[in-house]
Length: 369
Image (tube, rainbow, N blue to C red):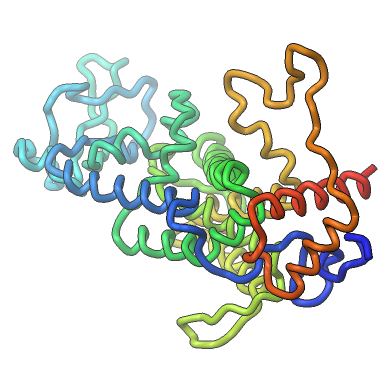
């Protein structure tokens, strides 16, 4: 019996998709998924350690009336107003994470300059201050690395816990299906697309001034942090790999198929985004990550070159053509598939997993051809 004749290759039954890893759960202790969680937790803890060295970050500009050219009183100096707008903030308040600070906005074309509004700042820990993403810093200041760094930052313990819980539950399955390197590329790509979705909707609403359902009209300096875009991509990948897998919700306590859970999460995010809810900016990133996850899990070959910064992994070696790994025999593939059917994908060795993955990719390329 060939690979295409097997029910779990065609996608029938409980397995859902070709090459699906069995079971929802976490990967090994040193998997890429685990390292992502460790990095997020360590960065969050370091943010608390350095909380006494907070950095004021511009959050929004509130302009009253017309102004030809806006300037901020104080510039890069230490002139800060407290929330009363009347007294200068104390040095300790300038470094207190979460504390709101203000500076007057002036029209520099007038003589003497006149105040035309208020610039609001929020004090952030150094890692969040220099790693968060916003339309202003990511697009207008071209600090494009923030499309990656914002994915490892979190606003509070609950934010961190929810994202890490999602990775712990769903990330292992996707990593086993894609492999370590492609999974890391997949996670980062989903986060990047989440940031780009936030950027696009905020540019349309906050910069161009278009008023349509779903666009973000908030200030372009509003920060975006969190692993949620990558997590949504991972959940969508699970829905593709194991659509009939049953998971049990905590609230309400009930079983639900993974595909319905994933589509439900995305549907709620879209609804909140269109209605302009409290976390519409975050939901813009969620939707962007989910769309990227649904796209790239079906085209994992596109992730192959993600880390080709200094070279091309597909380039031919100096001696000529790149050697391809020998194709496994039909009997060997049948033996591996029988092992999966009798035990599970977890019982395969690393070499057997590679053989099965390569044969699946050959079959997919043959179907596309």
